[in-house]
Length: 227
Image (cartoon, rainbow, N blue to C red):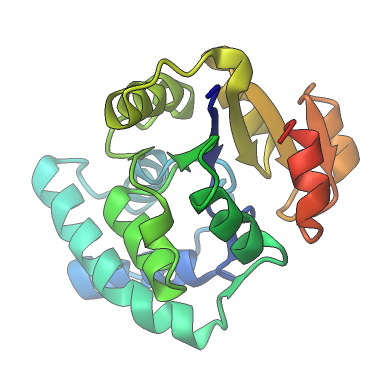
């Protein structure tokens, strides 16, 4: 059977954390380094956690060393569960139905293609009991450059399922122009959804194959990707 591979972004696509990640990063800045301040001007949407942390360290004069990075990530991951709970993080409409249907469909495989660090992704998705849907993924751990993550996700998918997914059957689903660029960088198709910080017209200007206002109607999603 010809399989379709769906590679999911997380924030703004699968769920809204309503600023929980940023708050966890800010809390870790205080607990790990004893610093506080604004993240204003640092772009979060569509960026990898590694790049975001590099910008935070530059803003606050922290040396970007392996030791400092590891300590900061520990503080961030430790803070995430409480900030997710406090910020009423939620799964976006239609997502639970789509993920469950995909998991039971022999012609569909799904994984993650996200700027989150793997441990952060596991906490965010685990908070909503969704982590188990994704046996493979590519994360900020692999590269701070988002456009380098697609080939890694595809390589892992092919190894996991033992199937050579053709690129015309590989879809990247995300909510920012960076997700569209990431898909194009390795020849995949792009479905852009306007459930994050970008409008449908903004997304359309970057040339995705499909733009949807939301994924609230799973049937529309499956028609869009040809399943």
